[in-house]
Length: 225
Image (cartoon, rainbow, N blue to C red; front, side, top):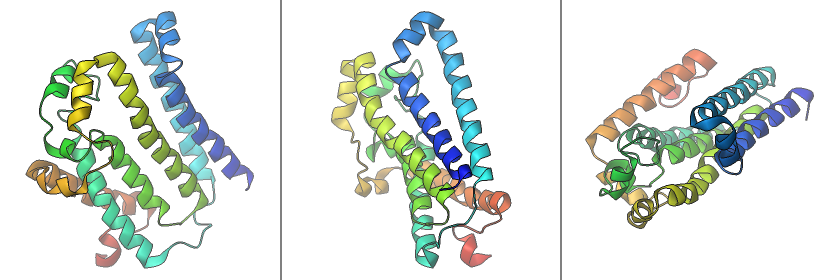
């Protein structure tokens, strides 16, 4: 592994590790020392600094040093990113995992939309997006970064259950009893028109941005372009 890839690996470890540390063992002492506002500011600054390091290291690493999985890989990636975008789009409203004043009331409500699939639709959206890049086997830099983002999303959401249980008590316990961590794929038929349409639009926009930013046709554009 060359120096650029070692740096990228270190950057991803720093990004994921800082998130886990500040969200769990370091959160309470940091809040005591800095207050809630200071903690939020420190969390944001560290996260953006680490993410910036990931970006700079990613761009410096070799772009296409693996053989790739061919058209089968591109087809799998295209299929995987559609539910990822539906979950992501539908997670932005009515999500008790987000830090909003309505979180407890949302946790007591009957699951609707993408929450019928999983109680962590945003994190599973990121996880499926990461998997869509892993199956391409396109470059080491992509494999390292996608794996890191997948671990952050899926392990992080599992750890979040414990944190929310401690913070919200019975409300989160009730939410857990009515929802699932692992996606229930059969429930996609019941998520509703808005998440499906918004997710499909996001799926298509992401493909256009991929072509514009990376210069590589992805998704349906690979076969229509």
